[in-house]
Image (tube, rainbow, N blue to C red; front, top):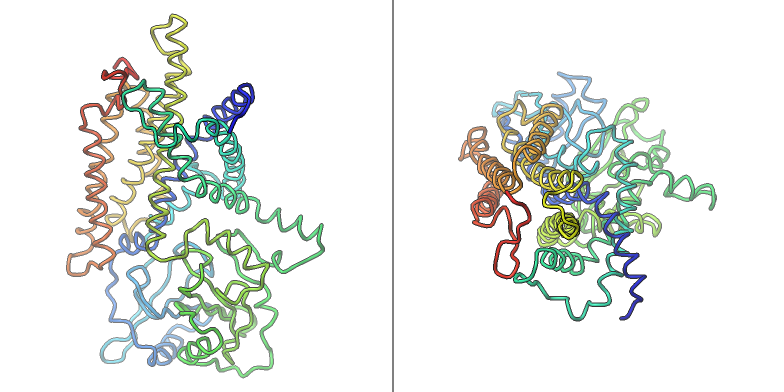
Amino acid sequence: MKIRADIVRMYREIHSWVGIVCGLFLFVAFYAGAITMFERPLQDWASPPVSLPPPVSLERIPELLEKTFTAHPEARTAYTVVLHPTPSQPATLVWGMPQRMHGPAAATYSALAEDGSLVTKRQPPSEAAHFINILHQQVGLWMPSEAGRFFMGAVALLYSVALISGTLVVLPGLAKNLFAIRLGQNAKRVWLDLHSMLGLFSLPFHIIMALTSVVFAFHDEIYVAEHALLGGGTAHQVQGHPHGGRASSVHQQASVGEPRAPLDPIQIVEAISRQAPGFMPETLVYDGSHGGHLLLRVTGYDPRYGARGAGGGFAGVDPYSGKVLSTDYLPGHQPPSMAVLTSFFVLHFGSFGGEGVRWGYAVLGLAGAFMFYAGNQLWIVSRRRRERGSGRVEDTRSTRWLCSLTIGCSLGCVAGIAAVLAAAPLLPVGGKMLPVQVIYFAIFLSCVAVCFCLKERRAIRTLLSVSAVLTFLMPVSGSVATPLFQTTTSGLIVDGTAVLYGAFLLLWAVWPQAGQPLFRDGQPSGLSKA
């Protein structure tokens, strides 16, 4: 494909400057997003074990409910029946937590001892993994959620411009340079080859991320505009941020004349299986704060369909008859408009296809993060070449600052997330939000400061070594908080992955060319004179 040289130059300039503006934010978003693909296993891993009797069977849940409501009448206001307990939700009955869809919340757990007596314990789950998700959503900034949403949307729009302009730049030489990684060439050529190859081979993934991020950021505004222009629809009834939300139609369809005694959980599960075959309920979320009339939301999965997110899909159900009242978010039973909306969530979160897709998204996320790092390095190398050509022997202040920020923000994010995960099992209740935030940003800002104080090569080696050590500490701190005999299979996978990733970071740190990873004519490229 041939494009006029002046047009290619224009798009190259657009791509370069847009990439410089949003590249560091996107690195954090993609790196944290890759880790977030395993938010639930990480939350289970970081949450300390709760000393409770084993979860009761489905048949004994009515007995557990009766004894809990007798001892704690306030539990009737809002409670959740967990059909498949996990380390972060270790009991069949959870109550006393806010009714929210996303993120862990403080709760009280109820269980039955061997003699049938009631045992309760209040312990919030770890918020470390949820913080990494928030970091991903707010592109690495610490700000109110609403401001973070709009800022993320602006970055996503710039990201879309960078994708379009970058694709147009590489199209003329696509056939010739598609698989070319010229390690024997100069530094600029190597960074360009790496950046272009990663971008082209993962272009569909990046298009999905950019489009869905814009939809998430301006979710409410899109619905308001739709309602104003088209005059209604079901989509605008969804309240709140697209990462959570609940259908208001469920509240409107509860029948006031129903008997006051709700069905037993086992009857609810059987009714759901008849009306939505293939849907596997995970939790029954009861809300009794509406004049004493219970509302019920059933969450779960259907392996044949993608889910709204890591929490799966859900349906509004009448707890007195078992009738499904709302299918707006029920996988395989959604109306067309809601199915289209859900597809954005499915594609963004990779909540389809099982573990293979989840690992694939994680790899693509890490590759995307490195692509943004390579893009910044490409700009720095190009800038240095122009400066040397003009007779300068030292970097200008802007070049030096961008180089320090590129290394500091990128490796600071890697080290900060590793520090959060390493510290989480040792913190009270696995880490509340504020201490976790302080740990991350203290490490992140320290890494940025190191890059401004040390030479480039030494800074890279130092931060890679720190990141490797912090990653190696994850299984150590996990074993201190949770004895080996209590460690679950998913916990062992987290520990094993941490060891392998820590080894990769350490090998990168001790690699002889770690500080100047590229070559020019068989000699070090001289990205810095450290």
